[in-house]
Amino acid sequence: MRYIPLALERLTEQFARLPGIGGKTAQRLAFHVLSMTQEEASSFAESILEVKRSIRTCPICQNLTDEEICPICADPERDHGVVCVVADPKDVVAMERAREYQGVYHVLHGVISPLNRVGVDDIRIRELLTRVGEGGIREVIMATNPDTEGEATAMYISRLLRPLEIKVTRLAYGIPVGSQLEYADEVTLLRALEGRQEI
Amino acid sequence: MRYIPLALERLTEQFARLPGIGGKTAQRLAFHVLSMTQEEASSFAESILEVKRSIRTCPICQNLTDEEICPICADPERDHGVVCVVADPKDVVAMERAREYQGVYHVLHGVISPLNRVGVDDIRIRELLTRVGEGGIREVIMATNPDTEGEATAMYISRLLRPLEIKVTRLAYGIPVGSQLEYADEVTLLRALEGRQEI
Image (tube, rainbow over all chains, first blue to last red; front, side, top):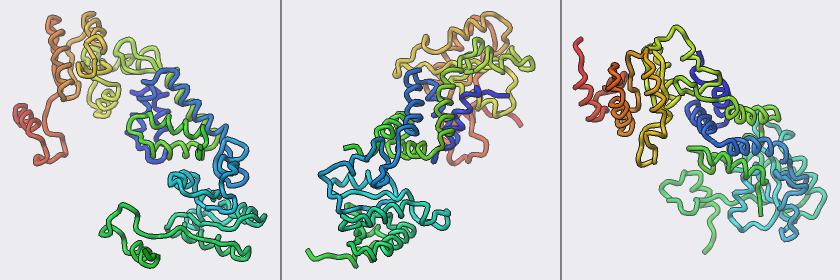
């Protein structure tokens, strides 16, 4: 017998499919939706549909946008000669939070990962090569994550870019600002030592 | 400048309004919705609307249902002379999981809580009194949570039921099955001792 109405069970299942949401949390969220006003629930549902309806990728940098060209690519104040290559749209947000970078981006939408069956044609490497090949770009900054797959992807792309004779750089490794030396892992410390600079 | 499309930001805000969902998780969920197929997103949105559209409370026990009368109240096999009073629809699910209780329920939809401005008229106590007053009920089992507010609500209701001369009981307190004595708090141990039974 069903002790919970079918509609509530279905919504619980929908929530439980989201990443990091377990069964108990999903049920709590479903009950919360039930306690919303009609307007709140409608606007929640509409937001979900709107995301699928309005968002596309920028034809230049491949970042997500709801406009023809994303605001960063469309901004004449940015330096369009420097391209920062990131794996994910969230990384653009992280970089922009630093309020320092003045160049533009290229979003790969993933990293090369043979284990997850993501090959070189599954992420937007070709678009980057075409873009760099068209000229006007002085420097490509590889800003994929400093893990095995991010490293491999950065190495692979930098090798492809070598014949084009542009500057290819990588974000510096080191100890995170505000952290404590004793908690830094050995690899990070080694990289921090290698990359030491005169003061 | 917006580095994230407006629709994605709005959906992130919607998720962040849910209980227990912080900003980072909300963003992750919004990106997940973006990666869903059109059909998955539509069915998610539809589930939200359906919950608000189809769910009402059972006119007898006040539990949530999508039918005229909830499946438990409509079941002739259940003992309609025994009513278990719980605070929340989730508690009905918990009780039913024990697969032991054969009676019916009454869902209060809350507990009396002066601090949260929930008074006796804000939860479904009057409906319970009317129901018991109509006759045919032999026993009312108070199964509100064993915390201050649950206790106070149970005491308040049992006092109201006293003139009707029916049996009013409370769920037993004691140490949880499968737990360890050393981790039981003093109040629970005291109650377990008070409620000890011959074996």
